[in-house]
Image 1: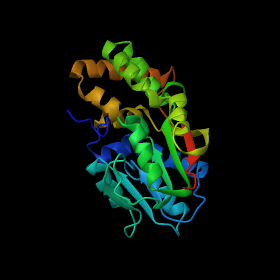
Image 2: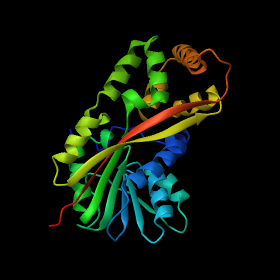
Image 3: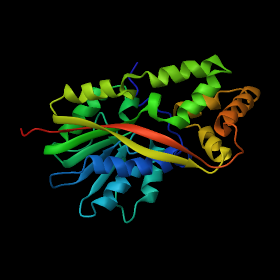
Image 4: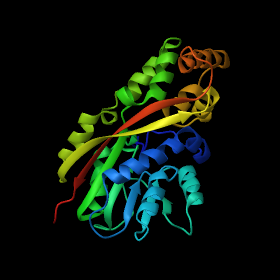
Length: 271
C-alpha cells in the first residue's frame, strides 16, 4: 500500500477558508516577517492551502515571482481564484516531489502543513533542493497543546461527552511534528545552517458562538472529519457542551482567542 502524501482531509477551499483561512492570513504576516528572503529570486509556498502565505509574500515582495503548490485541487482552485493577473501562480503538486529545478527559489516556506505530511524528511529535502544556496527554508506549525485555544476548547469539551473525541485529540496533538522539539530536530539534522526558531502570536476574533461553531462543521481537517462522523443527537449534545465552554458564564457575543505557532528556519549552505 502506498504512503498517502497528506493526512489532512481537504475537500473544499471555501469551507477551509471559513474554517481557518481568515486566521492563516494573520499568521502569514507574522511568518513572512520572521523569515524574509535574503537572496534574489522567486519564492515558494509549499503546501499553500487556500493561498494565504503566497498572497502575503506577493504583496510584501512585489518584485518577486511567487509560486504556491498543494496536493488538494480544491484548495489550489480556490487560491487561484484569489490571485490577481496570475500572481501568485498556483498549481497542484506534492511537497515531497516538487516540480522545480534545483536552486530555483530564494526562499521556500511551509505554513501549517509539515505535520500533516507522512514523509516530512522528504518534503524538507525537496524544499532544500529547490532553494538557492544562501536561501532560507522555513516552516511554521500551530502550538496545538499550549497555544491554540479554539481547538483546545472544542476537543476538551467534546472529550467530556464522547471518548472518541479525546482519542482524536490525543492522536492529533501528539503527532511528532505538532510539537516544537521534533520540528527543530528535523531542521537541525538536515544540511541547513543557522537554524533558529520563534513563537508567532496572532488572535482569532469571533463575533458569536455561531461564528465559532459553523466553520468547524465544514468537513476540513481532523475537527471537520470528527464532527462529520457524529450521529445527529451526539453532535447536538457536543455542540451544546462546546457552546457552554465558549460562553464561559457570559452572554453570547464576541470572543478573542490566542493563536500561537512555532516557526523554524535555516539557511541552505553554499554547495
